[in-house]
Every structure is written in C-alpha cells, then in structure tokens.
Image (cartoon, rainbow, N blue to C red; front, side, top):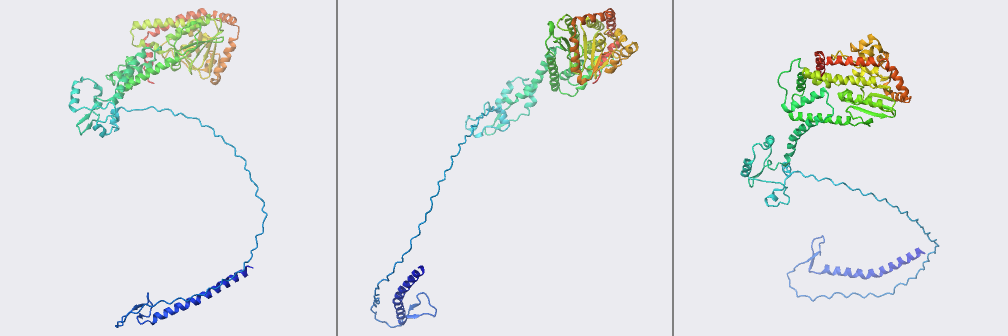
Amino acid sequence: MRGVVIFIALTFAMVLCAEEIPHASPIRNSTIKDIRRSPAYKQIDSAPRAHGFRRVSTGVRRAPESPRSPPKPRPVPMRAPLSVVPIPIPSLIPMNIPPMPTVTFPPMNTISLPTLPTIEMPTLPTFTMPPSFQRLMGITTPRSKILHGDNLDRPVGFERENRTDRKANHDQQPVNENKGLSSVRSRLPKFVDHSKDIVVSPEHNADWIVPFRKSFSSAQDLFVQAQENLKKLSEEPDVDVKLKIYALFKQATSGDVTGNRPNVMDFAGRAKFDAWANVKGISQNDAMIKYAQLIESLGNADMITQQKGVVPDGLKPVPGLDVTIEGKVFKITLNRPKKFNALTFDMYNGIIAALEASSANKTTVVTVITGAGNFFCSGNDLSNFSKAVSASKAEVKAMAEEAAIVLQKYIQAYIDHDKPLIALINGPAVGIAVTVLPLFDAVLSTDKSSFHTPFATLGQSPEGASSYTFPITMGQLKASEVLLFSKKLSAAEALERGLITEVIPDAEFASTSANIVKQYADLPPETLRINKGLLRSLHKDALTKTNEVECATIKERWQSKECASAIAAFLSRSK
C-alpha cells in the first residue's frame, strides 16, 4: 500500500513540473537573442565578464528611440488540480499495558548526633615587655605618630631628654649611686632622634636593668641568709662539710687563697688551707651561691631527719634518733643514714633516756636497736672531737671529762637494762657499735655486715666493757686480735667467734628478723625479766667496774698527743 501511495505522489509532481517548464524557457531564450542582435552592444573578448557587454559609439547621432515596451507575459491557463484519493491509514492496534506497581520506600531512620562538649580554652597571660626593652629589641612606636604628637600608641614610660638636661641630671646624682652598674651602663645603647637632636637614655629609664640588679643583690642576700640558717641547724655538720663551708665562705669574702700552707703540726690550719685551695678560681659571686646551696641542702636534710614517729612516754625528740612502740616491741632506730648513723652527744643522751623509758614501760616486752639505711652505726661522730684539735689543754681536759661522763652513763644503761635487748645489725658496725654487742641478749645480722674496732688507729682505748666481755666471748687471743690490732670481722667470722647470734641473707633480713622479734615478744614478759636478771647478775658488778676503768682510761687517751694527731689526720684526710 505504501508503494502505491509513493508512486502516485511522484507522478503528480512530474505533471506539475511539465506544465511549468515550457512557459519559462521561451521567454529566456528570446530575450537573450534580442540583446545579441542590437548594434549598440559588442561582445568584448571571447571570455564572458560581468555584465559581458559595453556600449560602443558608432559616430552617428541617432534620434532617441522610443522606449520599447516590455513584452506582455502570456497568460497561463489555470488547470484543475489533480484529485487525490485519500488513502485510509489503519489505526494502531491498542495494547493493554498493565499499570506499573507503586514502590513504597521505607522511612529512613533518624540519626541523632551527640552534642560535642564545649571546651573552654584557658586565657593566656598577657606578657608586656618593658618599654625600654621594647626599644632595645627594635619594637618601637612608629616615628610618624611620635613626631605628630599622637601618644595613643606611645609606650608607657618612654622618656626623652636633651643632652644638656641629661648632663645636668647626672651632675645632681650622688657619685656612688649604682656603682656596681657602671660597667653595664657603658655598654648601653643610646636611642637618638636626629630630627630633634634628642637622646633617649636607658640609664634613666632602665626598667630592663632590674634583672642585673637582682642578680648582683640576690647572691649577696642569699649569702647573708645562709649564714643565719647555718646557726639554726639542729645538728652540727660533720668535718668534711664544715671544711667545704669554710672554703666557700673564704672564697666568697676574700677571693682566692693567699699565703703559705701551714706546717705539718697545725692539722686544723692545714686542713682549712687545703679546702680553701680546692675552690680556687671560683668567682666570689659563684662562691656565695654555692655556699647558700650547701646550707640549704643541710637544712633540707635536717627537716627530713626531724620527721619522727610517735615518741613514747613523753621522750623529747632527738635529731638522728627515732623511738617508737610497735606492739610489744620498744624500737630505737639510729636515723642518720647520710652520716652512717654516727653517734652525737645528743644521740648518746637520747639512747640513755630511751633505754630507761623502755625498762619502765609495762606494755612492751623486748627492746630493739637498729639502724636506718645500709649502715648500722659508724661509732662516734668525730665532729664531737673537732674542737679539741685547736683547743687549749684546759679546754681539751674539760671536754674529755664531759665526754667520759656521757660515755659511762651510756654503757651503764645497757648493763642495767632489765628487758631482753635485741640488736638488728643491718650493715657495717664500727667502734662502740661493736664493743657493746656482748651486752645484748640477741644479735641478728645481715650477711653484708662487718665489724671493726679501729682503736689503735685513732690513738684510743676500748670502751663498752669490751675488755671484759670480748675475752669471755671469743677467747683472749681472738679478743686481742680485734681490740689491739683492729682486725675487721665479716659476718661469718663474727658468728664463729660468738659475737652475733645469727646471720640472715640481706634480701630476707627485714622480714626474717621481724618474725624472730615477734616470736621473742610473744613470750611471757615477767619470765623474760627474771631470767635475764639471773644471767646478768653473775657479771653485773664486773661490768660496772670495767666500765668505770675504761672510761677513765679513754679520758686520758683523748688528752694525749697521739690521739690528737690521729684525729687531726683523720679530719684532714682527702676524699
């Protein structure tokens, strides 16, 4: 059917074109022929040009011709249009398309975001440089604002003065004012405004020089304050510390050591000279600071030592001595670990009072003496004898008599103590800490302990009734080896000679010794008192007599030249 329709349409179009072409072609052909025949036109060249022709004059005038009327077009007869039979187009076949199903999406779950906590940023402190320091560092107010009189941004304290005013002010000042800053002033820069010939002098606006002033004055202030704090120490420093204090004091006040070294017989002067020479080259300002730091360290150690436990029975606190009651145990602790628990005169009197208080106490069963740190006791603190080195004979005699009285009371307190007395030797023991051990009822020692009695080395004689107890305990020859020739015993040797009861490994010493002491304390207290009285009664009179003799002997030895020389040599030893 489509092919038929197309054929009919093409046929109809060809008929219309055939009717139009014959009418158009004769008109065009006749017009061209008439133009070519006209004598007024001549073809130029063989090649056609635009408009192809031009008018050529023949030399003969002719009368103008009447314009030719254009040919009338031939009327074209109208023809009836070709009738076209309409072609029926078949309608589209209807299709039953099922409706699309409706898709229902589930509602989205609402997600609630947690509220972030509000963080408050701290306000930073505002730091403002001193004006003159700002100018020194180049942080200055713009010059235009200063010249135009705008003082809004002008640093506070920004002062200017003419050279003449500055000279006049300088003449009015005292001559010695700020003399210590003269060397600093000479190096201070001058800020000059060349437009007005004005100088900003930091000497009169030197708020940034305050740190220099403080550094110079603070060392002096600390030095003076340290001298006052030295007098407030509850415990006198040992000899080595005293020599350091002396050396720094002399270096701070007098500078480097001068003069010749004292002779060999002047032990004290020689030790002081050597100590002063050791700090040679230190500036006086640094010496003041080191002196203050040393005194401060002594004060801090003194405060730590004074932090005691509960002192029973109204006993007065003693520096270096802790007295406490732990259940059925009356405990005395030597607490001077930095001085190896060396005994001072105050500690002697404190231990005497503590032993008497323990005997009178009815709630405790046993008395325990031990040391703090890694040392049990290093014997007498030789600072007790430091004054005797440079004292007169009368002064040395008075000090020796006083020390002998204290020593005799101290040993007698051990002899008269009626409770079981237990020693916990936690480290090395020296001197009187060894000689009193036979007066104890039980001695527990760590395997790292040692026992030394250097009486011959120091020019002294034995004390603690050891001249009576040691030969009984270990025999005459073994006692002589220890007391005469200063043989040092290990823990095992001391156990073999009967000087101690038991040796305990150092790692287990604290727990094991505590368990043993607890077992002793659980025994009937009255029975322990009676039994100890029986054992001590056989030797008590002899011990008391020996104590008197030994104290009288050692009093004489303290006044001898050998003892003075030995102590002086020990005090001046180099470490």
